Structures are given as C-alpha cells and as structure tokens.
Amino acid sequence: MKKQNVALLVNANNTNTSFALANEERILRTVKVPTAAILRGSGIPAAMRSHSAVVLASVVPSATKKLLRLLPVRPLIVNAFINLGIGVNYPNKKQIGADRLADAVGATELYGAPAIVVDFGTALTFDIVNARREYVGGVIAPGLAAVTDYLYQRTALLPHIRVAEPGFIIGKSTVAAMRVGAVVGYRGLVKEILHALRRERGLRNAVVVGTGGYARLIGRKIPEIQHLNPRLTLEGLRFIYLRSCDR
Image 1 (cartoon, rainbow, N blue to C red):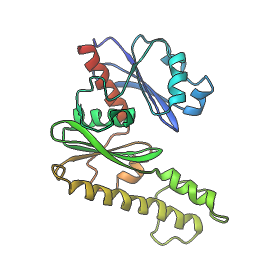
Image 2 (image 1 turned 60 degrees about the horizontal axis):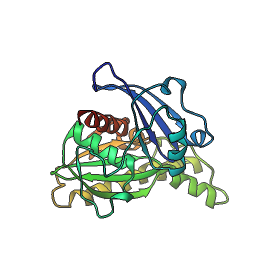
Image 3 (image 1 turned 45 degrees about the vertical axis):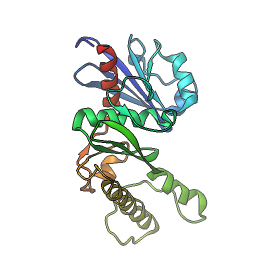
Image 4 (image 1 turned 90 degrees about the vertical axis):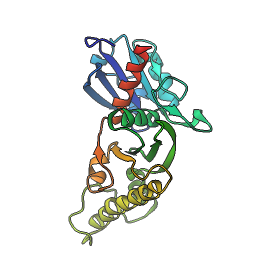
C-alpha cells in the first residue's frame, strides 16, 4: 500500500464496531459506534464510506452480513485461512475469532514473540503467540461488564454501578464495595491467569500486551502487563492489509 493510499479498517464486536482510516505508517482516525446501530442498517460514519480498500474483522455474524451490504466495496475478511503474517497452530481454525487473530498479529508485529495479549472487551480473552510466531490458542473469561451486570440482574438489592477505581479497599457503601470487588477482584483474575500461562513452556519471557475497553482501568495496575495499546486490534488489521498489498 503506497503512503498516499488510505484503507478502511472495521472491527465489529458484540458491543461496539470500530472504524479506522489507516495508511502504511499509522492509524489516522477512528470512530466507534454501537454494533446495534449497524444491525439497524445505519451507523457507518459518512467519512468512512468512500474508500476502495476495506479490511473487516467481525465476531457478530449478523453484523457481518449487514456490513457486507453497507460497506463501499467487498472487504478483505479476516480469518485463520488468509495470509496473516503469523502461523495458526490450532485444531479448529474456524473457531478463532477474527479480533483475536488481529490482536495476535498486532502484538507480534509491534512487540515481538512470544506474546500474550489480554483483551479487556465484552469477554476477557488471552491469546498466545509462541516463539515461532504461531497463534496457538488462549483463554476466555467473562468480561468485566458481564460480571457487574450479572450482580445487578440477579440480585434484588444490588444496584447497577459505573465501574471505576475504588478509593479504598474496604467499601463504606454498597456501590463502593461492589467497585472493590469488580476492579480489584478482576485484577486478581487476570494476574492468576497470566501466572498460569507463563508457567507453560516457552512463555516465561513472553511480552504481555493489554488492549480493549477496560485495559487502562484494570491493566495499569497489573505489573505483568508491559504494554497497553487500546488500538491493538486495529493495528493488527492494518498489518494484515499491508501484507495483502505486498502479495
């Protein structure tokens, strides 16, 4: 891709869909809209509609179908069978989410391998790239919002809370106590999974990268996470597109 050319990158997940304009050097601009808006047949920003090159990663089949009708051209659809620039050593490649592959590509290209990507999204995912630059699998756990929403939905007295850093470890109100449980407890979950992963052969010195909506809130106090990159998935899509152009 020549420097003056600009590609449209699209990452559709369960909560939001991100649109980004990128050239061969960097991401230029991003816009995020609720995926529900895409499903209603709207939501693609006007500035994102006229580009001749599009890369799409989607984990929402209904959104994929809608986007294929709304996007200006047929996109390069990310999956485990295209040229990603990393190998995929996984029994059933069709099961791997496109966003997880993009995360793995972005982490490998930007930070090297072996790598562990922690994506704090609708689900909490850990994705592993070994020293041979192969995606080899990972871990999936409930997302932070899912945990707090479950408490609100399944109890009579606990409120719906805005997740934020607690001021004290001992909560002096219901909301404060829930924030401690959510934020501090969630960090414990992430740390324990990272410790278990680093005990696996070849991962002791793996670089750990955090991304996703809650990456800064949760990840900034987890010393095991060496890099925080909220655009990692989009960066991965950019590298995938560049590789497709090289071919």
